[in-house]
Image 1 (tube, one colour):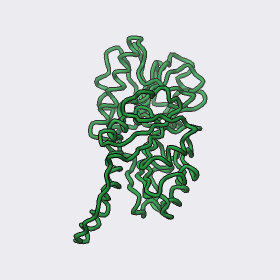
Image 2: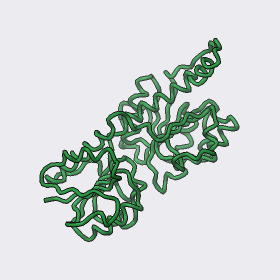
Image 3: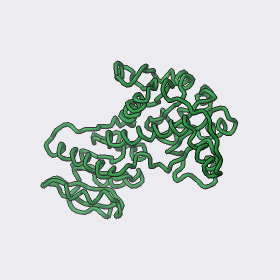
Image 4: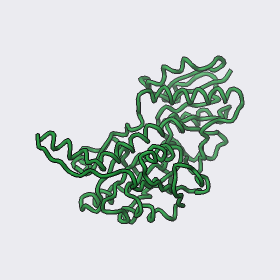
Length: 320
């Protein structure tokens, strides 16, 4: 009999899918150490709670049979801590679930600016007939900062529009010959990618190395017509530097789904900027995403029961 502890709020919509847990697995659900009694866990499922919740439960479970923690989300920056990183416990994430939705969001953001949909809506609201030339997406260059599962999903969709794709990743050799990509760059060429791209997408996870990765220097390298799209983590982009560039008109605009502080404070300047498209960190929350994310976990749970290699294993030291 395996024991699974699920870290989730009582109203989490994913809990309904735990009735699919296979026989031979004992399930306990809670948020606090005192919520879990009985045998220590063999596995933990983290349903979008942070380190402040995960860490005390982890210490309650250790030492013990705990061998695996699964993060339902793709990002694990909020749940990693030194003791977990140093332990032999395997961490997996929801890799593969969120890429398609974020790929469609990026397509929408690119089209929003290329076709100037904001202008169309303003003219419609004013009942003003205002024809103008719209731009091609075809032939433009899209730079992807962080070419993993999500980056590839973005590249596949934007390649279909006829865009040229530049990809930046820590180990470029892993993307060599990948059909959606025209050119792969190493991290030392970030400024070059920023300058060559008409649209830049940040899809990198948040780590010590990527915090503030896109800052004053990188934004300054963008074309005046350039657009920055962030679907990774808010803190990857220096928001103060981005605000200055947007206010001063040094870049065309930004589409942002993630922010340094969430929810975005009501006084933040992003709210009042017409050259910014905002979404409240929901671009990957497509219809059915919870069921898909829970099924990905359940598939991994079956592998864990059988002693097979797990999918979506995270490099805990690198943070993704």
